[in-house]
Every structure is written in structure tokens, then in C-alpha cells.
Amino acid sequence: MGLKEQHIEKETSALSESVPGSPASWKSPFSPQGLLYLFFKPSRFFGSFFDLNRTFYILLVTWCMGIIGSMEQFDKKLLQDDIRESVGRAGKMVGIPLYEPVLESWVGYWSGVLLFGAIGGLFLWWIGGWWYKIRIKWSGHRDPDSRIARLVYVYSSFTRAGPTVVSIVFLSLFFDHYLDYWQNPDFNLSPFLMIFPFWSLATSYIGVTTCFEVSKTKARIWFLILPVTFYLLGLTVVVGLISYILDGGLT
Image 1 (cartoon, rainbow, N blue to C red):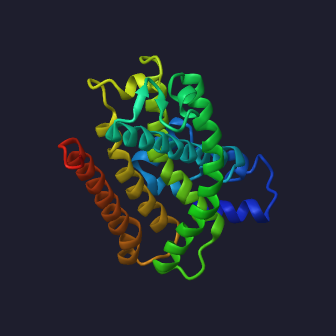
Image 2: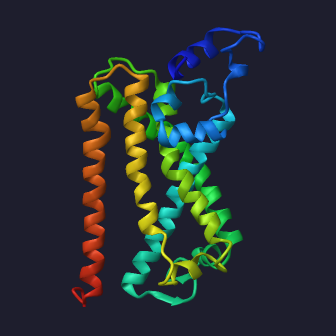
């Protein structure tokens, strides 16, 4: 029984907990088997007895998406200040004193990303999920279920969000605060974390083709080719701009 069938059964039946295949017998997506399938066998993850529709799990994966969005915003501001040489002292960004307690303390950092992550997660669930459904429709499915589209979206995105959040937790064990890590030239997780956006896109494509009747050619365009192209173009622009500025191009 796949994700689509699970959703229908949850909405339309009240099966006994003792009945095999009922919601009570579905496995947690965060069980070892669930995580193994999500990262390495996504077609089986989205097509098996995993309780993807439970509110707690949905909130958790969506919150993680919002958290990495908040982390990226902090990183962008730090990068801008590094480029412009506008950091007056450790942790204080010119014109934005709010960032100081966030960057000089792990408590402040996690409080900030958890709070803004909750807000961002809501936006991603509704707006991001809506755009995801539109792309499924453009891939050949006439009337994709909004709920299922959002579930595929958030769980496939967790293959990027989960490792990123775990990595920052790991950093908090070895650095005094986030700025301490940022300013350390000998330790950089960015090359490692750059793998997971592509991993997430591949998981997303497999999830869509598993849960929806779509044209695989169109799905490759909307869920693989175009996202990868835009990601690489954006990355190229950012790297090129940083190199240009650091080489003295803007003086």
C-alpha cells in the first residue's frame, strides 16, 4: 500500500488497530528502515507502510525545511558582510544588531533558527506545496491530490534538511558559537552539504513518479533538469561574484 492508498484509507475508514495494513500498523518514517528507504530506496519509502500522514511527522519535516531556510539567510548575511568588510567586531553586523546575540551564542542561534524556521515551514508547506502540485500537474497528472503532493514535497526535502540540521548540531559540540565556526578557515562543511540538494531532487523525482501517474519525460524536466540547472546557475553566479570582489574587482 503506497502513500496514495494510505491517505485514502485514513480519510475514509476507521479500521481496527488489530487489522494488518491499518494506520496503527504503519511504520514510522523515522525508524531505521524508514530513513534507509527514504535516502537510498525512495520508491519503496513512498510505496510502503510508512505513516507519512501523521501530523507530528509532517510538522517535524516541515519545520526542518524552515530551519535550513533560516540558516541560509544567516549565512547570506554573513557572506555579504564578509565581502563588504562590514563586520565591525565579532558577531555584530553593521546596521543589524539583532544578529549579534544569534551569532555569538548557540542558544541564541538555535532560538533564532527554530523560531524563524517555524514561520518559514508554514510558508513552505502552503506555498511551496502549491507550486509542487502545479509542477506535478504540468508533468502529466490532471488533478494531483494536494495533500499527497505536499507530503512528497516535504519528505523528499528532508533528505537535504535533515543532514544539514544534524551537521549544525555536530558543529555546536566543537565551536563556541556559529561565528566561531564561520571564521575558522580550517573547517568547512559546505562541500559535504552541497551533495544533499541534488540528493533531494533525485528523491523528489522518484517520489513523484511513484505516487502519481505522470510522464517521466515531463517529470524529469520539472523535477530534475530545471531545478538542477537553476541551482547550478545560482551557485555559479555567487561563486563568481565572490571571486570577483575578493580579487579587487569592486574597489
